[in-house]
Amino acid sequence: MIRRLATAAMLLAGTAGLSAAEAATWRIRPGDSIEAAIARASSGDTLQIDAGRYVGNLRIDKPLTLVGRGSVRVSADGRGDVIRIAAPDVRIENLIVRDSGDDLGAQNAGIYIQPGSHRTVIRACVFANVLFGLWVEKSDDVRVDGNLVTGMRHKLSSQRGNGIQVYNSQRAQILRNRISFTRDGIYVDVSHDARFVGNVMHHVRYGSHYMNSYRNVWQGNDSHDNLGGLALMEVREIQVLGNRTWNNADHGIMLRTLQDSTIAGNVSVGNGRGFFVYDAEYNELRDNLIAGNRVGLHLWAGSYNNEVDGNDFIHNGEQVRYVASRDVRWGQREGNYWSNYLGWDQDGNGRGDTVYEANDMVDRLLTRYPFVKLLDSSPVMQSLKVVARQFPVLRVATIVDPAPAMKPHHADWPQWLARVRNDQGNSPP
Image (tube, rainbow, N blue to C red; front, side, top):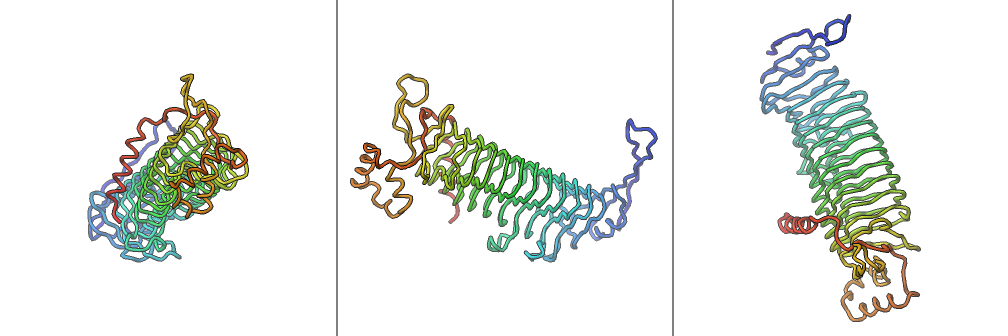
């Protein structure tokens, strides 16, 4: 039975001559129908749902607030969306949303926010065994905050949906969510002026898969134990600040076809490639820690006109992988730190007195013919390195840092390397 507990008139303070706005609170108990409560409620009402299991496919077609009291489990029993929002100004808090359908063509989701559902808020919910966690489509000013999303972990990655998908929606706020065992953690396409802050993504394909989106902020997120960390592609004017990526099989941070952006203060440790930079121009990369990766930074397809300064390249298997026809100069203001730099600082100004060059002829051979790595420690390869340095005719185009920093900018780099090595040692096969 659904009981209407209270109806209160609320007069807007400081506003004269306006009619009072009424809002009611409805109490829903196990055995009651949430669908019936939604049908009876008026715009602006609140539905308080007591702990229990409720089965069905909910459709919210008016501005309502749904709040769980205790362990409230809303299940679609494996069919369709668990909840579909079809109205603006809907708020959902503290629900366990589970057991959506698994039809990728129908895009079954825990919560599907359909076009026009502006200003929806989804907060402190748990999503379990859902194909897509939340799907946000053509709805502006949506806030998704503090949720836990676990996908259909029994399925192959290609058969899962994404944890949070944002499509053609402006000014989204995606904050402090934890996402695992989905296809991609957060998938973003054609969505501008958004903030993605404090999210944690692990055991997915890409922590973020981010395309065709401008003027967004990606800050303070963790992405680890994935195929790839942050994949930022076809974007402009993005701020990538203070994110941490580690133990990802391929890249920590991918910057592909990126312009007019700032990538600063990030940590990329223990990945296949710390940064993969492809067709990226007019960006600023500074104050990043790039350590313990198989390749520190892979630079490809142009990517000449960037300011790369104040970064730490520490104990990467290959500091920079770069194959091009001309040199690129980095570190013009304060210099990057390179753990394999063999120069000196005679005047004590904290900058090296000799130029650092990231690659030589032997590095080029290793890039083009990986099997040559088998001879890397042989006298022949060591002789080639010496000859390449002594005879400029054998020199290859490379990254040049004219006065590299003599000390790392990040004092905590040993702790990061120790943490990553410990995590790798304890990771399941």
